[in-house]
Image (cartoon, rainbow, N blue to C red; front, side, top):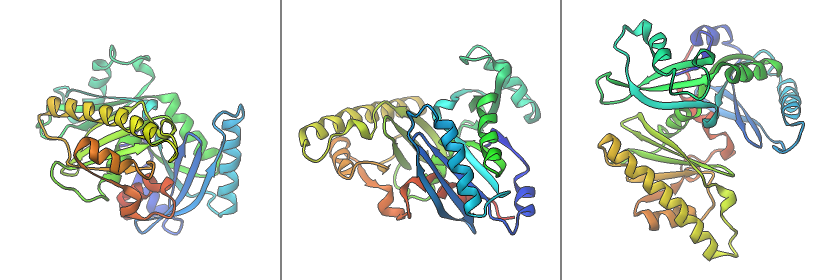
Amino acid sequence: MKLWDADLRDVLRRWRERPPVVLELRRDGYCLVRVHQGEAELIMAQDIDPLSSRYRELLLESLRHSVQSQGLAGSPAATYLFREDYNLQVVDAPKVPAGEMLAALRWQLADLLDFPVSEAVLAAIPVPDTEGQQIFAVAARESVVQERVDLLRGAGLQPFYVGIIDLALRDLCWLLPEVAGGVGLLLVETRSCHLTLVQGGSYRFGRPLPLGSAHFPGDDDPAGFRSASEDLALEMQRTMDFYENRFRRPPPAALYLCGAPKLLPEMLGELLGRHCAHVEELLSPADSRCLLAQAFAAELPAP
């Protein structure tokens, strides 16, 4: 699923001798990863103060320097939107031919978005096990997508793909062991988390949660750590209960955490009664901040 792209295979053929690059933006910086034969090689992980009044300027300057210093100018490049950059919801699939789906969806979403649908870039993802009756409808402001394209071009790269983080997280789930009920992945960021549920290799559900690593105190405050863990476990349990009631499927028995405090899997395992583990312990990346880019790399089609 892509919100903006060139012809993917054509781009990769054109740059057969120049491996594609994945830019993984974070709220406090970025990771730049080179993709080669389905593997992700970390090139640069750079922190940038998100509170700086010059954040966008500093981001572009740093990214441009990284591209030039690593000899990446002109490389095909991909990136993802943050969850708050787009709207994703389950809707009934318009009963029209596939070629008319997005046009019909535009009318269907007109009253469901908080911005004019005329300004939206749309995509549709089939909801598994509904026989085409329902879809995940994705809508992003065209200006937001174009901003990402312009960032890549401004850094000297050749953009070919802008996707969404929900499906990047699904791709990361594909790298993890699937047990009864599928795989649950909790991406822990500074101020929030994102819980993604994948079953049978298909994206099933995702939801942002209003707690992040900043809510957890250090090792010197075990009571505070447990209290924060209980708050997060409650949000996760509510999400899984909603999923089970809405989709009539049991949630995954295994939950994997990415970017989480060291003791959090053990605590959540106790509170939720589920197997919980760090993603980093299973995949052993060079830098855990490039995991989404690593997952994207594994799914790039061979030219």
